[in-house]
Length: 336
Image 1 (cartoon, rainbow, N blue to C red):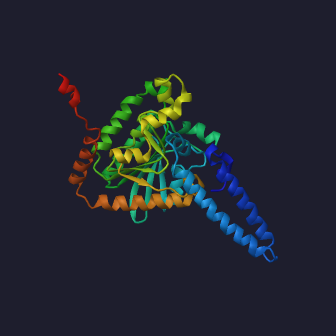
Image 2: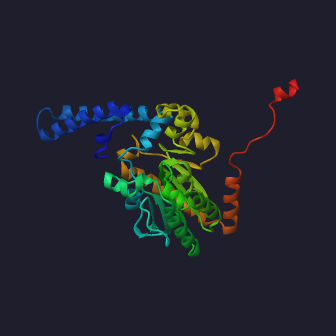
Image 3: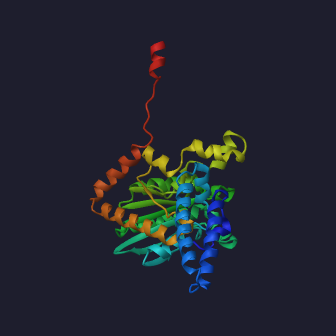
């Protein structure tokens, strides 16, 4: 993706250096396409492309949880509005919560996904400082969740499936949000999404932090893009509580077990959507293509289910999460 090198992550340095060499060689080849050195340069370019692909595969196949968090926050990573432009044939944005205002941290609207009419709900962080400030860096206020909830109820009224994109470090934690009922509106959203009678597909496309993520995260399918996280708290927040300093965030990220692979193994999510080689910030179109294929397949499967069966499966899905047994371990019982 053009511009990805402007915001490089530390572990990506070898990749960026090789990309720079490749770019220089391709420029040289373009200038001397008819020269005697042309065949040799072309072969070097092919070899370097293979080496670059191999390096990306090696680096991204072994990322630790903290590096996955860094990738999920990459400034060039596609956000909800990017995916809207690349995935949907039409999109009509719907604004406002009919009470307080229009929170730009949550985007809602009607859309066409191939031959399917859907209701879209998703977080938006913004790309530059002005956008990020307007979107509050993806941290929604109560009016954002009320807006999402109103549009989801509208979708159920007209039999439209719902698509939800999650990308937030958490709901806005300020005093003004608490005064306007942040906790209660998120709780109301959780209850309503568990009961709304239409198919819901939720996808974590970047950060999935705290109740702000869960507030639009109850659905019949919950998937994560490959290099994202979904957690009750951010690594920095966890580190500040447990180790009294955000510098312990890498340790917290590992302890939280919040990557897509971890959550799939725990049965919290249903699917992992693969990202392009080198992650989504390098190729928005391929990332969108993979995401669109998943959404179409999931919605077509869900639409075949009778609504009563859909609701029962949704209930059982979340009822079965976090199963545990109480009591002493066997060795303790033996000592009693």
